[in-house]
Image (cartoon, rainbow, N blue to C red):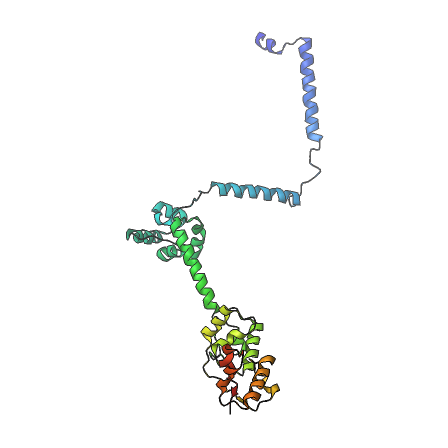
Length: 295
């Protein structure tokens, strides 16, 4: 009994403490039982703020996953090993094709050649080719070849068919196929050709106003005088001053001199007598006599 008495015997202060503790426990129990601890403001999980928060989390997760992926550094595709090829996503057959090609002491020098040898898909090539690093001399060589092919394709595209190669029958559209000849020059050539009644000499093309020598040479490299024009010549001994002045190579002063010479000799026996006229432009003689005769 003494043992139990020692456990249940308290002084006044201890009894007051036990009583106060019991009251506190009862009050807390009543608060828990009767109190309302429910959250009045419910959180809308579909609100824009919550969705934005989830998007940020997903974005950070994607960045982290991407950072964990193995990094691919620039490399020469000629030295791809089995392990490296597997990391890049190549199949065993594709890797073996490359290795067999390399055993012949040959090198892959372009993305297209790599695909031709390995037979990788377009999607895989587009994925790994940005990391290909060829030697500088190969890059320079490929650049030159690409530039050359571009030029060839450009000039091939620029070559246009013409309806005829006869300069006296060519149309404005035919002349416009020549580099440097636009709508204005093509019409100007045709207008001058009509004035001459057709080109009889290649040199007459250089007389077209504003036409540069280099461009005229391009025209003559495509168009030739195949059928010479039939020009109706006029008799220098009977022609009137007004009609003679229509000759494309005779101006007013020369026309006056020809008539003065004709009055002096009464009649020209041969058209070559025009050379006897003082200050006659001998450089134009072969063109002037295209339209004149002496009878």
